[in-house]
Length: 271
Ligand SMILES: C[S@@+](CC[C@H](N)C(=O)[O-])C[C@H]1O[C@@H](n2cnc3c(N)ncnc32)[C@H](O)[C@@H]1O
Image 1 (cartoon, rainbow, N blue to C red):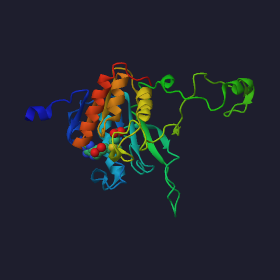
Image 2 (cartoon, protein in one colour):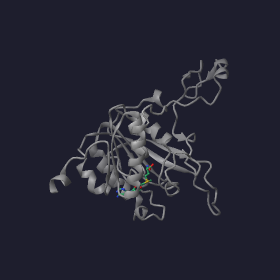
Image 3 (tube, protein in one colour):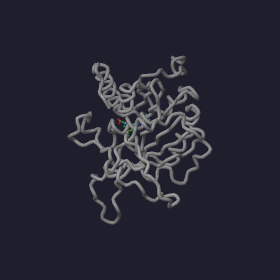
Image 4 (tube, protein in one colour):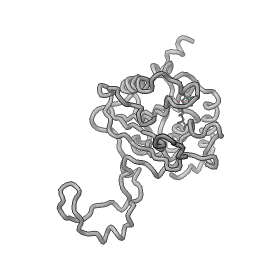
């Protein structure tokens, strides 16, 4: 029993446990990518009631820094203030604060502007990412291709010089405001249950972008707050290994069911 408690976690499993108890069993320097969609500190869920979300996130960042390989990435999900006034710099290098914009969120504010975005903090261990596969995550150019081809001479935004516009016909970098991926609704086919809406389940498309950009086939992804298993499910489809941890048994069961469905779907789904 004691031996099992000490054993290094196996890949391609979701552990029913508390993340802080299990993380010491993840081998240092073994993880290519951490996807951390944990507590936001704003809902009435018991697991979301934390004293100070920033201190909580700093603790996690320090743990993940040890688990990541050099050049590995961490995507930390939260609200706009989720890393305010903490010094994460001794641990990881913040490359982007991605805004996940959800314009359809109800504008209920009466004395303030309604918050209609989440933050996804993108960190790297060290100076250079070991994987950043831009070609895997390009998005359509907003301006029609034919129009861009006609705009032969436009001034550069950096030095004002006129020159030919450079653009890639396969699409552009998705940038750091992601408004093209919608939060799930009651009607979404992939929604596991109504209980999982809003505070739990993320869209597969969101996890897909993160996984495709910052991991390669065969890489090991750590998801310490796995919920109903969106990240592990997409890992499985994309040929990434994962270690998932989740403390709600019903969510673990829902996640395992989804994983079995991926295994059954022999043709796989095209992303
Ligand atoms: C935002 S949800 C994750 C949703 C997930 N990305 C998905 O798409 O299903 C956060 C999850 O963290 C779990 N959780 C919170 N504190 C935890 C802890 N200390 N250890 C393990 N799981 C925890 C909650 O039960 C919840 O399912």
